[in-house]
Image (cartoon, rainbow, N blue to C red; front, side):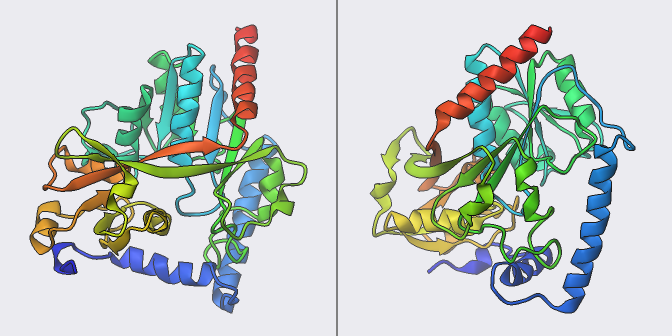
Length: 354
């Protein structure tokens, strides 16, 4: 067993989040205080959205197409892999892609646009943005103000922009919205924050241009998709890459073996489940979303293999103890041709306008 003193454990914020999730993803009704707060949140967020819709509050239109990938749940749903896939599709059409990333976990102020390179530091710019910069071949910009981020990307030559997250960032006008839903979690108890996990009411699903369902193993009610364009996708963890030497193995290499699983991501349980589905005996390493542990202290407490997500691997600046492995996901769509055609039409339409 791993000595858990090797990591810092979970922060107060993470423990609070997990406490709320124990309410959000059960059939138990939230208490009256949480429901009243959710009612206030719904009224305020609904009015804000309506003000932008009516033009009372101004949306800024950028000169290139804007695609927003996001969710109406808090927590991880698979936005970043979809963003990478979209960037690849658009690059195959000869486009210079810009990506707006949240930059969560980074120490640098996100009030001013920050361009992220492959050599940036995850502690400064955030793990997600660095992962995107290294894997996408796109121009990546971090900024709280997504309009300013988009303007910066256009100034650097971007032909088309993907906002990784930002469905509720209404000041930035968008040409295409993709909603992602985790099938295993669905909409939880169906309540808005903080009584439930939702930023918007489930009925808004009809307003998005396309809906992607991550997985098919869960609690999502597919009748909600009536009248929408949608498809399923899966994140397949099938290969592992050594972080110490140039070698790659099938994930089945670790079947029936104990491993330390490191997942500083929004939905840790999905990563653990994926490993368990391959017969791997998982010992989770306590770490916050976007958090970091001392890998060498972790190694002192256990000689088990350390398996981690790509977002974790970028945090450690290529310094890993022996027997450290990256679990490399691939994305598989049930109907990717439809979404590819939609992207081609979006690019073609913009070219005609130009």
